[in-house]
Image (tube, rainbow, N blue to C red; front, side, top):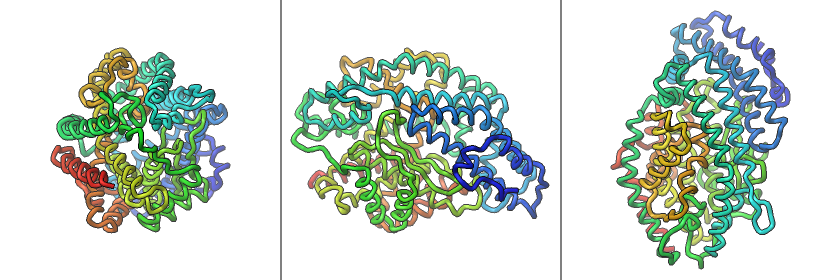
Length: 572
């Protein structure tokens, strides 16, 4: 009967639970023993691939156009009428496999994950988890509708980022104030949504008999190899080793700009990001069209490894890229997978800046992961820890960086500037990551206070003052302390942020290897990606040539290397 699974996307998108249910029932009823376990897993994998692709395609449709009511309705119908039933059916199959005590080859880690997921599962949480997904869509709608009128034209807030490249400081300030005013206009509606999030998550944790939502989410994210205490150690290491380096970056740029104090509008994205170049230095303009961005990125991938370019060109040919920014498009960028066809899909909001190049290289690394794991036999082997999934993306940014000028994207001098911006961005990101992660620990350790937006404002401000030093926010209190409202992960993917910091440390280690042997580093990188989720997180890091760690010594070596490279590149 598994030969009758939908083959065409248009058929898959019309799938209903009555059509899906018989496949789960057959798997559940089938006797399970050593002689048929592999076929049973293959059939389960094919079914899971179809259900996964259905969910991902419906979800993607709500982000490419947040005003598409039909897409919104289809996704909500899935969440109401399919999602809970699928989760319950998947739980039944997990329990069946675990009860069999069979361990197929390459299934050690998937079985470990299933045991954790089975222990966490509660049928009473299914409608709550579906509601959480609906609230995520609501958050996207709020953010996607944020536009301002600038010089007589309606612009999205992402499109306004180009104004922060303007050498006219007064213009930058006007743009920043206009953007901030529009964001603060949604302050109350986001506060209301936040309180609903918090109430929902308290119920989810209580239903699962967890002491708090952090304990629930830790298990949900399958974090076996580190603890909240390790995160606190990481925050402290960042405070002692990275924050001083970040202050040095801010001080250098303050001097180059010739200003007494750096203000938010002196930063590339108006918040924590890299400071601007001096007014007499033209902004980097890497591409004029999406087609040019695609073509030059493909050429970069070809220089990193010819196979990477073939993967990327496949995505271009098959229409698996949505790169341009437009009104009613959800913010941010992501790479997801369509698992029936074993293809990735990249979503982002390009407006012609260097950060767009970095984003496409980043998401391109994620897409590589999808291609490299296509040969794994079972769907359950594709569950890669996010801490390493982000190594795939962040390492690609660094591995590709030597080739920016070779493809005609930049002159050698411009490429040096781009690389400096990138390395400075890594250093400046770690303190910001610490703010986001520490804030979430506080929120869920103190759920009563964490549900009160005013107290969230106060805590965010305290953490900002601890980690983000060197930028003057005097007189901008409302904007500063509501920064937590603008970080999508805090609302939509709780606790999913420290992964970026840990992965960045692993990526810099890979880059250090590449400085000595680029081909060897790329080979190790691809070998590690191909393992998927068949080994532990520390083993994945080791396979790629890195160490999974939180210590200040490794972090200091990474910072020292980047500061030395920045000094070299400054000579161009």
